[in-house]
Image (tube, rainbow, N blue to C red; front, side, top):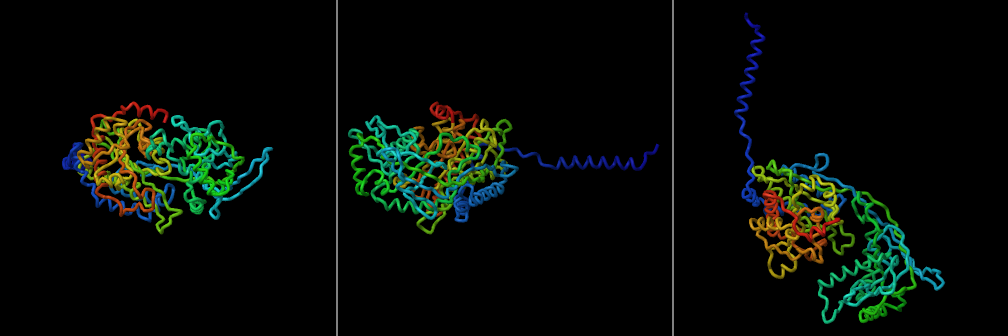
Length: 574
């Protein structure tokens, strides 16, 4: 029987489609094989060039970024800049709602004025007001508030000399008196060099001594500290500082993560500098010369002086407004190529925030550009991301995944990295290492003096993980070939650099880290930290070593293990 024409045409159409599909499949190229070979990846470090670093650090640290202070328009402009660069590199956005931004909320305060009152205590317990002054944007006072709580604080004043207490040296300025809940007035502007037998304290020991001094007073539960500044310039320094301090009123301060705002316990430390003239009055001294002689007398009799009541009390009343802010980390991702290892993540990080605008600059330059701190580290991470992106475009990828993380709030207390570690985009238990960098574009005074500019301070590595140390050294040997200076790589280092940058918020969870750092220089936290002072050759070498270390960790047969028991003990309870 003859089939209907429509049926025959339908069969012909289906056959044609099948033939067409088969031809299409045959013409498609086979899926590209991804090369995860370590030498192939390392060859792309050549993409990290001084020209690229300069081209991006220049706009990133420009005046138009307004110093990139956390929570400000300038910081958000910097975040936008980074997100655009990561997008141009084809890296995956892994922030909120498909963006590159991981947002977090902050709380802060704005102080409009502080009222200071000093009163005399009569023998019968009565009080007589002897001084009232107001610190605001338009007026200075007898005190300069350094920091403190937003509550009114009222207490008696105890004079504790230099406020020293050291059993080994036989010094106890607090002997026989309980200073809990009282204001402690000290000559803390310049502690004396302490002689122990025939040994004069060195600068490093003196620094440790000062840190111990400060902590010791706080641990006594004092209401606050009233500090008599360095006396060699007498009242002039105080007056200059008081005028500069006026600019801070109406500005945001005391920034903290909103979700941690209720975690703080035990109140806030209150610290005020006092006018030397007013200090002399409280101590019953006639003038500033008498105050200087008092200091000399205390230095001579440092072991015999004991704290004593002054007969005065002090009331501090701040007028403070609560402020809410928002900031963001910038997160870009490259998935690893190994099906078994790609769930494990190496985090390459730097902080991109800085100090904003200067309120008391004596020059026309009012922008804290932060070219080195930490524009250098931020653009260093970006250059490493570019190298990985170029490798990927040519079919070369690491086995494990890499998260490029630019955090804000570091200058306010490691806030951005703390938020990330408490709210990780990828599980902390799958985070195999953190490679962190801060200030990698300048040469510090020690190396300037020696003429050695081919160095990097390393913090982390073997003080946490011997595996991490080996991977770092292998990466550096095959890239920047920098001298790895371990001067600060010590859990007992008085500077405590091992917990002073964003790597610590990974380390406290037992994640091995390496911190790349060139040291502090003369423009540190100054408006003079400008791009024209950056050593781009050193910066490029360091970025290549960071890149190579990341490659070594991402391609290692096994993840680096934390094996330093001392570090394990330190991180307990953090």
